Image (cartoon, rainbow, N blue to C red; front, side, top):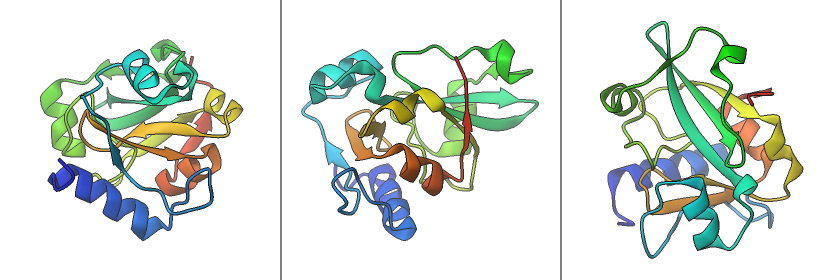
Length: 156
């Protein structure tokens, strides 16, 4: 799985951005023993709070992708964010190259407009998907904003 093209793309994007993790060392995509398709499952596998999981949700915003990185403890309030439609799996894969359940905040074929939940800023370390449902990486809120060129937003 470490040689999966999506995992490689995410690691390459992290390296190119000079992304550092909560420990100050370069971010590294790690593989879990099993795939995790929910924030609760990821938190359990990592022995952390569900709020520390950065869920990557792609929405269809008038035909353009919008990536919302939200705390695993929240649900996105789509009415608050504007006219959004739930993206189909095909739309997600077309714009990210990654499957639902493994969408990373970066490593996409081209940049995707990104909103980052301000609630994630409450944690010293947050965990995001690494391109497939079995891959994750740790990062800080400030670094996540920087490497995604994201906008901090109240999304819940």
